[in-house]
Length: 133
Image (tube, rainbow, N blue to C red; front, side, top):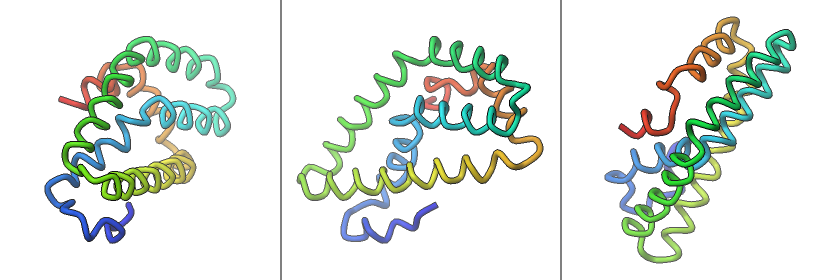
């Protein structure tokens, strides 16, 4: 992942975990959809199973993902009250999200990545609420 050099002027150390958690929780649906699309591209024969898993995952997580996004924006506003600080952190989160999307593309090439992703999506352990615990 990206070294937090661009946020160095901020008091990020205490909030670093919040920033990394925000990357997933604020973008859970988009990252999960990207994972499914990449896995289907690598394993077209699993399209139906991945599609079903994604629908079920979205049904379980739609509200939690929206609530998590609101929570993290609120927390970031508290921890980084100036607009300049908030925008720096927002840009960092966008960069980390891009890196996460790139990592998905690289990692699905691993032989067991997609089957493991599918198992995770089919269980509640991939749910946004579970991740937040």
